[in-house]
Length: 119
Length: 119
Figure 1 (cartoon, chains in turn purple, orange):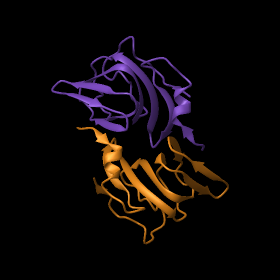
Figure 2 (spheres, each protein chain N blue to C red):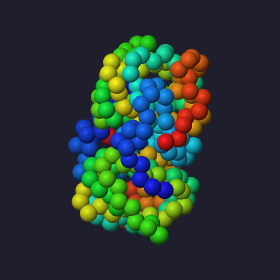
Figure 3 (cartoon, rainbow over the protein chains, first blue to last red):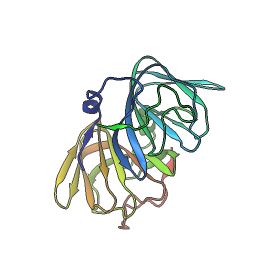
């Protein structure tokens, strides 16, 4: 039970596409990720996923539209909806999602991280 | 499915201690609150509660310690833990908690809001 300082936590890692866990509550987890480049198309069958942009601009492609998210903006992707995040420059993002989730959803790729490290 | 801009949402209301709902996912809800002054002592029997300080400094008193939270800091209060938020100046906070929660927890007071308005 202590304060979690987001900027301090972001200083603890640099690898892209490798979410780190900073807390959990009510069966959900709070992750931080640094992302740059293109991720893969994927969907989460059973989990809604929340992106909160802490720094930078993130593009999320959907099959029928493209959304640009800027600092201070939140986006909730409902379960089952295919999406592909793209970051032209490095983006810092806070993710909120169920404990059981895989960040690559229904797709297993070389980007898939099985367990998120606590920081 | 559209971006939720936190600063724009905060412009839509001014009343203190009256959380507004800006989204929900996985049985959880995302609330914004403006708070100033002292809240009441309460606990949430079954729900952990997350505070994310967007603006200002929030003091949370516990029975055994006092924590000061500043902008960019997150704090998770485990279920059952009595707490009392105090804001000397206005604080803008993002709350993340289960849909079923009452913000005054186990205590019903004149501050209790039965249903959180969507904004």
